[in-house]
Length: 112
Length: 112
Image (cartoon, rainbow over all chains, first blue to last red; front, side):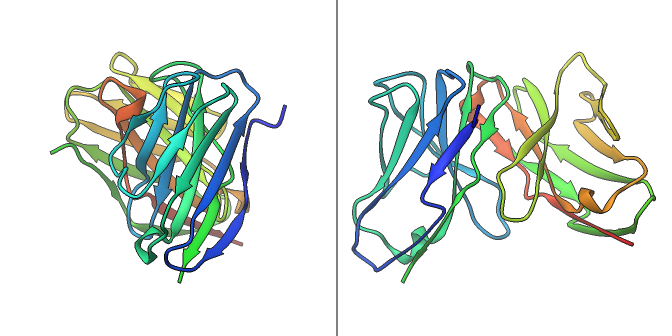
């Protein structure tokens, strides 16, 4: 039981490049979330999904897109990376709404 | 405005000593309050979740208290260990897991 895994662990992008972050969970959780964590700030929700095939915007969705084609996977895309998107990205999942959230190990993204 | 404030921002204690971290919130409506531990370079790990009706909850050497009237919570760590060195994050839910309000965290350093 791996829990929540994230790929890649580190990435450096140039401004304007695109990339996709992959999150996978093996706990059969319905809900999945993408957060970003910046120095001196609390985690902020980017997008979330309440089930396979669904996505919704969180607090800071601009510049990101997501997809949940399979229940166990939640993808976060950056179409045209900007330096302001330099951050640590965490994926999380929960069995149902407002239940305990389990976090992945994070992806450290630097945009130059 | 929904906010979660934690104090102190950082704390240094000697191994074996006890410490208490504080969390004040202005979130309304209130659903539950969570404490997470985040080791450097890792994702947050849940320590406790408390609902309105719970005023204390323990997880090993960690004991969380909640006063819903004054909107305050504390996390008490007993007989600290070097492995307790981490950031401790207070999180409040206002009825949905997709609406968590994260504090900025307290960084605890335990020295020998």
